[in-house]
View 1 (cartoon, rainbow, N blue to C red):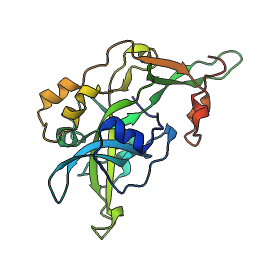
View 2 (cartoon, one colour):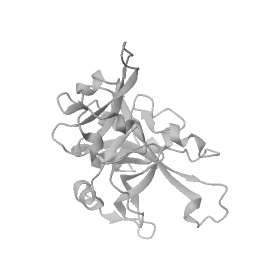
View 3 (cartoon, rainbow, N blue to C red):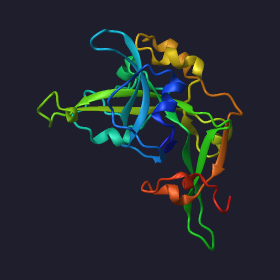
View 4 (cartoon, one colour):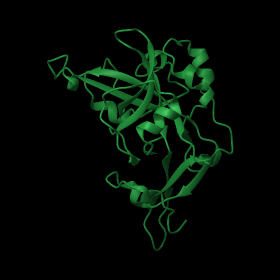
Length: 245
C-alpha cells in the first residue's frame, strides 16, 4: 500500500516536468515530507476547457482519499487512499474514474513500515523506511480522481459544495521495496504519461497495458527516523537515516 509519501517539488518544477499547459486558481500546496490521507496534494490531469473544448494538461490540488461521486457522505474517503491495480477496473468505487478520470500524483518517494518484534530490552515498534527512485527523479504515481457534491452545501456555485479527491494505484512490490511491504505505488514511465492522462482513452485492456510492474533496480530503500510515524511531524529531517540503520 501507500499510506504516506513525500512531495516537495514546486508548482513551477512540476509544470516543466509534466508539460502542464494550464494552471488553475487552486491554493498552493506546500512542500510536504509527510503527506498523509486527507491532505491536499498536487495532481497532473487532463480536462477540456469549458469554453473552448480544448484539452488542457492541468496541475491541480486534490484531496487524498477518493470519494465516489455516488457516495452519500465523504466519511469513507480517508480509507480510500489506494486502489489495487488488479481490480481497479471492476470495483464500483473506482471503475468510473478508471475509465475517464486518471491522473499522475508526483512524489519524491514514499514510506512503508516494518514490524520489529519486542526483545528483552525493547518494546515492539514499527520501523519506517523511505523508498525512492535511485536516480532521485520524481515518481509519477498512477492515480484516479473524482468529484463529489456535498449535499450539506445548498449553493451549487459555492466552492465548498464540490470536493475533488484522488487515490493512488498500487501493485505488487518489487525491487528493494518488496522486502519491506508486499505492495507499492505504481509509477508510470514518461513515455506512458500521454496515454494514461488522455480522457478519451477508455479501453480497459489498453489502460491495463500501461500498468506494468516496474522493472528491477530502480528503487533505493533506507531506514529513517521514527518521527515520521507521527503525521504532525513534517520537515526534511524526516528523511535522515535512522541512528540504528
